[in-house]
Image (cartoon, rainbow, N blue to C red):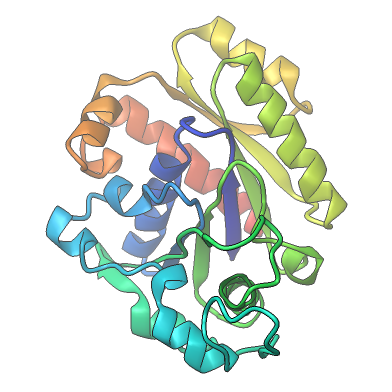
Length: 259
């Protein structure tokens, strides 16, 4: 299954992505967790040690690899480079294993605009296409607020878009924008997870502001999750039974959609 997780910055996308990836891995699935957010918090949310995180080199920083596979040196604009570089071995070679999950960080492309036709951008788009369309393992993608790394070519390979929403108008507006963008490229299954819910009014606000019946779980505001964030630990290993049940509800909702 290929799952993209999106939402406004700071709503808890990485926390949800990490929890879902580890729960699936602990059930015996082969899981690749792809950090496609330039802010790159997924490794920390997984509880990866600082030393292990330092061993991760984002794909966008693998300059020698990108130059080799695209056939042109970075910053040599005006040169012709391969639009379909070989990427099938990248996740295996450059992913970092942690808690049963293979973690791969895309990083940010520094050159040009968001849609630049530069070697780095071309390489990353080819990689995402390969991971979505041609790899057999479960893929959890921690996206940025939009869906920058997805396009029409890969949209039919995405089984589900999970949009994380906190009780606030800007978060709801972002969720509606992501939903519209997902629909425009053909992603048909979009569901929501409420996060940082303090009371029933918070949950009702989110539920009533988004398409009816699509919120599969609501995670309460939780000091244990805040502590996990500050200590760079996996939230699953910090929360009590009541909150753990909400994470399991997310997993169950995903499984039901998959079936």
